[in-house]
View: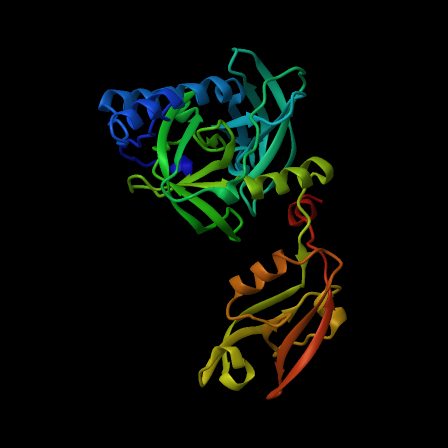
Length: 357
């Protein structure tokens, strides 16, 4: 994660300055060829675009300082970035920035500092919301991350290594990446960027040239160059809504402990081979939807609502798309025969709260 550090390299992306009506008319008079833009004009347009975004978004970017206690009783300081999403003090950041923090301080761009309270966090997406007691604050607005394109210019603003309101630019290097969250879950549709991120950028906004937040910077690969990752705005908006309303994200839960197992291909016709894979149930959690549905140790789950389940990641991803309370249909290999099991999904238990009791 970002706290482990890493280096990246500089880069530039040029944005072509729009041709005005007058320019177009002049070009038409001179034979229809569009005038060539000088390099200085291109760089000026690039610079102006970045300046406009920074002026719009930077006032909403905050720094976070946290103190967390270790199991040995000592205090460990930490830091990160975030950004205001409501005028009354709600701040979005990364879960790993504030996880298990007993003190959280938020520094605004205007120099004011406030104590903050954790509203909720979701380690599965590495997102968290904290709140400061203030009103009339500047905010950063979400954009449409689903419309991002590879090669598109993006700008990251944050507090790397404690350097407040640092600005770096880059491009969207790839879309649809997968990344393991702090709790081991797979985060999908992650944005990859070559904007130079450093320790402390965690939780800061990744914005487009319109000044809209398209991602939340979350991770780099230690030792690599130009490999940064951001949680897409579409995911962040959904998670924020859950955290503000409930203090946590409720996900559908089946309640099994399983492992990958090979099965004959005839049980998974979509596979098209002689052998396929499923999830062998090793243990059924007492009181879980799996127990109520009649799943047993030794069963091998090969499909969910008709979609093949080839790995624990497949099962996790498919469950994540199903609303709590829905009834799913599982294809199960039991004693050499393919059976159907219906299960009504319940909310996933909050393990952290249970462990603290």
